[in-house]
Length: 122
Image 1 (cartoon, rainbow, N blue to C red):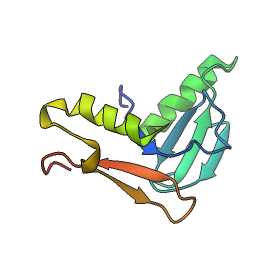
Image 2: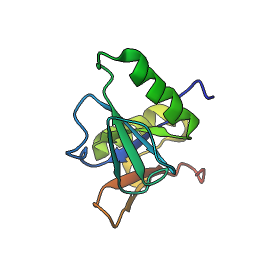
Image 3: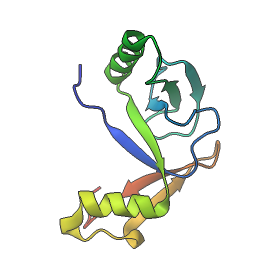
Image 4: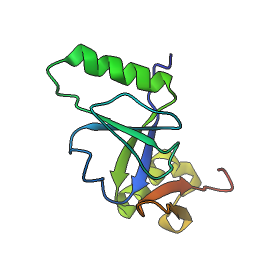
């Protein structure tokens, strides 16, 4: 079991079926959550949303642990400017800038995924 949760940033709008404030998971296999759906490929095409404020905290925590064990990552939707800021913070010594960010458009619902290339590092 992993202790840390990988977070992937996606440029675009949060899907309307994922309530604001809920944790959204993505993986290459089906996930646990109160809301589940198929969507654009980020780390996989399976999505689930969990409510971190649910009264059944242990059940939500259990879903999060099982999702991490299923190789899931959390998804956060950001603007292009926010993605550039994250890249600068994370790769500041490499002088990341907006012109080096590339996006991939999915064929399913037109959300874009962020890939950052900095000094030839993928």
